[in-house]
Amino acid sequence: MKTCTKCKLEKDKSEFSKDKSRKDGFRSYCKQCAKEYRENNKNKMKEYRENNEDKTKEYQKEYYENNKDKIAEYQKEWYENNKDKRKEYGKEWYENNKDKRKEYGKEYYENNKDKRKEYGKEYYENKKSEIRKHAKNWSRSSSTYNIFANQISYAEEVRKDPENKVLLQVKCTYCGKWFNPKNNQVRHRINALNGKGEGEGRFYCSNECKKLCPIYKKVKYSAEETNTKNLSREVQPELRQMVFERDEWTCIKCGETVGLQCHHIEGIQWNPIESADIDICVTFCVGCHEKAHKDKGCRYVDLQCK
Image (spheres, rainbow, N blue to C red):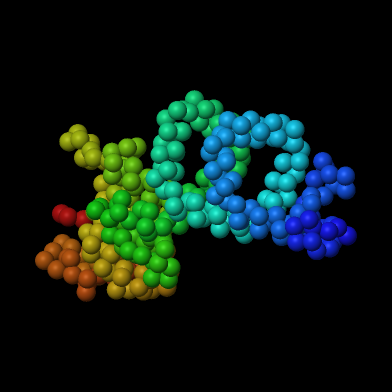
C-alpha cells in the first residue's frame, strides 16, 4: 500500500505509475490525481512548451534516447489494448484530412518514382505466384456492372443481372441470350472498341455459339478470294435471335439447349418475300438441323440456286 501525497489516501501500489527515480519505484501522486493535475493545467503546460520549445525538444530527444526499450514496450502494449480506439481515431482522421491525404499522396508519388518502381519489382518477385493466381481468378470471375457498363454501353446492349444487381449482363452475339461475361471477355471487347489488339472481341455465351457464328474469326476477303469456302449463308442475326427467344433457346425436336441453329421450314428461293418471318423458322440443334436437310426437298442439293 502507498499514500498519495495529493489526496492523502492510502491506495494499492497498482494505482500509482512507475518511477525508477523513486526509492519505492512509484510516483508520489496516484494515477487519478496525476490525471486531474494534467487536465487542470493544460493551458499552463502548453504555454510552457511554447515558451521553451528548444528546451522541450532537447529533453524529449534525450528522454527518447535513454528510454527506447521502455517507449517501444509501452507503444506495443498500448497498440494491443486500444484496437477500437485506434480504428475510431484513424477513421476520424481519414475523413477530416482528405485534402491533406491527397496532397501528401501526390507529393510522395512524384518524389519517389524510382522507389516505387523498385518496391513494385521486389513485391512482384516475392508475390509472383499469388499475383498470377489472383489475376487468373479475376479474369475468370463475372464482371461488375458499375465498373464496365459505361465503357461498353455505346456498342453493346447491357443490363444488371436480375438475380444479382451487382453483376453485368450482355447479349450473346450469335443467339442473343443474356449472360454474365467474364472480366477477360469484357477487357478484350474494350480493347477492340479502342482499336487495340486483334479482332472485335464480341461476346459469346458459349464455345458452341462461337463455332456456329458465321462472323467469328472471319476476315474481309478481297475480290480475288470471294470463292472461299468460309463464306456463310446463315440467316440474319436479328431473325435468328428472335426465333431462339421465341423457342426459349431450345431445340423443338430433341430439347437440346446448346449448339442451336435457325432453320427455314420453307426454302428462301420458294418464299423470298417472307424469308425474314419468324413464323416460317424454327430452332434446331446441329444434329437435328443436319437430319432436316437430309429429307428430300430440303437437301442442300435441292436448295441450290439453278
